[in-house]
Image (cartoon, rainbow, N blue to C red; front, side, top):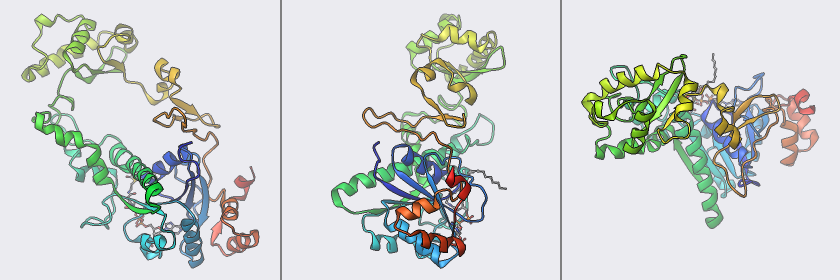
Length: 382
Ligand SMILES: CCCCCCCCCCCC[C@H](C)C(=O)SCCNC(=O)CCNC(=O)[C@H](O)C(C)(C)COP(=O)(O)OP(=O)(O)OC[C@H]1O[C@@H](n2cnc3c(N)ncnc32)[C@H](O)[C@@H]1OP(=O)(O)O
């Protein structure tokens, strides 16, 4: 796999950093998640392919131990508020001094500087500050955050993974590590560059929810079908729009022109009534195999069984039967191989990992007895 041989220390976080770590693990990195002690269970639902070490960082020996793990690794991924790692004496300056090849990734909401740098926040706050949230939502309604996808995952975990891979690539030339300041506000904004830069072509001139791509245009929207399900319509180009009208059995000559913005509400009413006349499956029969850009809106539970996704094996089943998306994109020679074993329990691999880093079993036993580390002995034996 592309990242084989890369060792990553991921400090356990909430959602963005765990996703970043999972991407790296999916593509072959050895990711070690550092969990807290005395927590029972992990909230990391993105633990695929990782191993877990439980360390109490409120002990000085725990901090020393983590330092040893970090300086013997390629990447440190930390998800804490600005200054937390420095307080522990594990800031980038200290660690890079000991290991100049280390890539030190800091995944935060507001970044390492600026007046919000110390503030708590979550996805919705970061998307709000990026400017994007103001553009999301239906006409006449309040701004709407589409799950926690934009900042936590697209602008956060994914863009931080890109930063790490770029730094690894650069290290092959310079031999040097570096610090990655991954701010979710900036990651989200960057991911939304199209929204900024396409203002120059008038794509967002109208209020929220009244533009071509935000629910304003009848040919770029969702419609309810006769069975209470939905279809998605994305027929932007005239040749595809023509196919849409054909499938809906509408006479183009009797309708206002596609780009007559003032007539969009009326066209929407016509499309709404038409789509309500058949079931979702009926519409798939009408539109599959055409260029009308009409697809069913699938629930998560049905996505993997859609013929297209089934043919590409786009979803994988883990050992417990749980389904999730397979890693993307697909690399031809070195594709990701997602681990199908169950996600790691807190401290499941403490003894195994510490031994790999050169600790003797007597060291491990002593640290266990002192409460510096914890080992989930039951899971570790399975
Ligand atoms: C009832 C609750 C139910 C919860 C169910 C949860 C289900 C999952 C839901 C996922 C929701 C995802 C949401 C929508 C998100 O947006 S997640 C993104 C959140 N934001 C970020 O990640 C940005 C960067 N991080 C942060 O800003 C902050 O970490 C935070 C998220 C605001 C949380 O702040 P806070 O809890 O005060 O923690 P921090 O200031 O970072 O300090 C962490 C403290 O923990 C300590 N710590 C860490 N590891 C260990 C360890 N192994 N052992 C002992 N202690 C440990 C650190 O030393 C630090 O301690 P201290 O410096 O405060 O004394």
